[in-house]
Image (cartoon, rainbow, N blue to C red; front, side, top):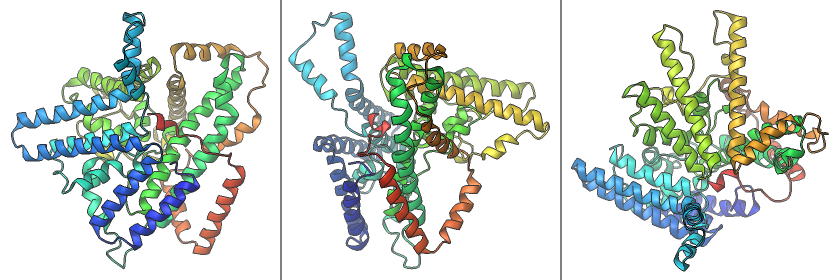
Length: 520
């Protein structure tokens, strides 16, 4: 059940009405949202619900056991056991088929074919939507109890709600257990005080509109006009077309993923649930580390809190820190898939973050200003100073950060912006390719400067420019625009919303393409 469909709109209208006007007690609302989430998930395949319930039960069981145990060794054993079971569950659906196929044809010449193995391979091909996201939430519940950040949930339905909450089920944001359960009582009773508005309607409406605009207009048009035709046959494309195709994919993956996140956060707000920001203009980053502070923020924070810190973080010297950075990003690459391009993509991100960290430490040792943001800067750095979730300055401040030499400083900042953006584009080429051969074909085709221009239409420059403009407005400008929007009369807001929907219906293509990150 996709968000931008009439089917989901009808489903959500029923849930919204029952939540705010029929069920008024917290326990009733929890049960309603759990049932709604399972109905939402069954819209893809009812068998997915069995897996979702099983992971939730596993998480609740290990969380309860951790809550009862006081000694360190039993707690460690319980946490490790729960973690291994979650990894095996996730790994079966994401990697079992590829692993067994590789072993079969690499070591057994294709002769290792038993009915049991074949059946298991067929089951593993059934990749449930959002399995990575709800598995990560389930693991977060166990980790946060183990780290004494929270106590086990008071009831099993609360665990079910946390892991299955339908606005965040398919592609995040990945809200960590501590934050979700701390805010749950207030979220369920936002209408208890008649003097306070329970719904941030203006904010949620703008987020949903933003998500629809990014997904149905920008991502769709860029995919149809440039990405799909160029990547289908790069050898027949001109150099300019190849560059436009790669640049278009860079913005397609942003508009597609951030568009879903905007809609997920907006829909959650309509039910009184806050969610963390998941994207913050990632393509104006001045370093790869800063890019990961702005891109898929909830996933990056999960990686930091539960993977990077487990590697030791920055507590054991520069070499161990570099290894932790590379290991963390390598795991991020393998999480996306088992193919070689995903491994290369993760390794490339990790090496870039490690190099930036080493360069930053070197600058400090030689008395230079270490203005390069570095990933996973210091141990247990929290929101305002963390590598993956800190708020970032606007594009204007990026240009004026070096005041000691205005012209040179601005030029240097622009070069850094351009260099990082080029690195990210190359990274997305690796990310999208299914094999090293595809990467090599695309790169070698860049020499086709004499090839005629026949694949990409010039019209693609319009949605490409519109997608780029999304990166420019800083936090202050966005806040001022929102304050002005809030003060507008309701009639004008309603008229603007109706006009947007009419325009969206006119220009959008028939049907809704699956979101890219549903495959992860």
